[in-house]
Image (cartoon, rainbow, N blue to C red):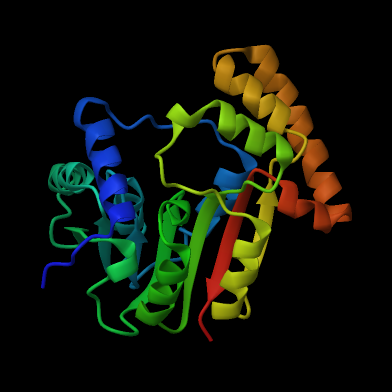
Length: 251
């Protein structure tokens, strides 16, 4: 049965179809602390059925199959990205193990308790969070887990940056704030949140403006180490960070 998209979903669909129709996905190969931490969850996936939530061009799905996942389903609201992901599966000779479907994350057609794991990279903030989180919980098996890496927007400097640079994001996306994490914890009571990029918000900003600057990269590494020490000692600072990794077990 075809799902009727909400107005917000139509805006997201149009934005991503338009963006990626003429542009390749810009991969960021710089290994940040957040990216390394998120990646560690993708190591133990052998023989599991996994949902790649907001699959984009399918890079996470391909990675999961290479690591031994039994079956991967990738969903995305963008037809353009699903077509790219499907072609990537063919190119990597994985058509039988990975399936890409155009599907909104808030209205998934999968059966209850269908997946062992769910992964998503910078996708929840593009959704209606209430519907998305409840649907993710529904399709996970008891004992399953969802892992997401998402941008935060609690810090005043991040809010100013986003106000000044609206062209960098879709009109309806909303980076997470602390109240969103409280809501998520109501659905997943044993949720854990891991925070990254506090003081290094400044040097990350420099790298956005000067991506090839060795000096900016050097400064960022120093600030990243300081962040790690600060956040271990003062964990309440976490809500003011730029990035959060969510670990959401279904018990």
